[in-house]
Image (tube, rainbow, N blue to C red):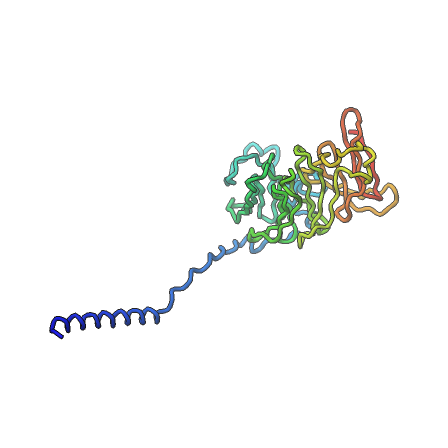
Length: 334
């Protein structure tokens, strides 16, 4: 072997040794750590001290709280606070503002629990806000299905109970949200939006149940009110605002299939009759009245509504009360 050949062989051997050493060293090096998942932001102190909403607090809210759509079950809709009066109202000035990110009409009252404000907006969105500072605490947003025909993309508020916020999503799904984190706790389908159903009302919480009604009368739905277990989201009962054949009140409807598309949507949250009604001597509980197109439906959260009537005319204004068995059914003038 010539001197030149020996030099090339030595060079090749050295290169091979370096390559083997590099591979061995690389294998002995620890692998880089895997990227850590995004850690949730810390819960703000105001939410760490979130005050659970109880049945007693719903019945008698503190003066500074607004825990449901019309504040109290009787739907009075007035605050007992007296700091703002007719004498000083003209002197009010903005303290803070917050953009919700939605441009459609906002129809939900701010729901306030111990300084935490919950605002439902169009676009399937709920915001938690520090009522004193205007700081955004969390944002919950549920995508609206692309194939959904949503005639009224609004929301009229949320319901509160325990440590949950209840939201009637536009695509006819009831959602329980963790009040402290804004995370979804459970969801319960109410109806199929492909059949024209949607929701826009604020859920009503009573007796451990969350009650909602459906919209969609423009698209020929059959309206109803449904109750779900507040803790688990399991369906409890469902009662239609239009009676089917053989159901109480069906004799007042045409004999065809009009009941299938009779409307009766429920899009306004119910007030409560202050005192139980029991004209027939049967036990009764306070009833909830639900506003529909041309009707007022009254039912107890403990039992489904069992009686219904088509509206009767009275001086050109249509109004009815639909009630449970043991309470009765009648048409009333207005």
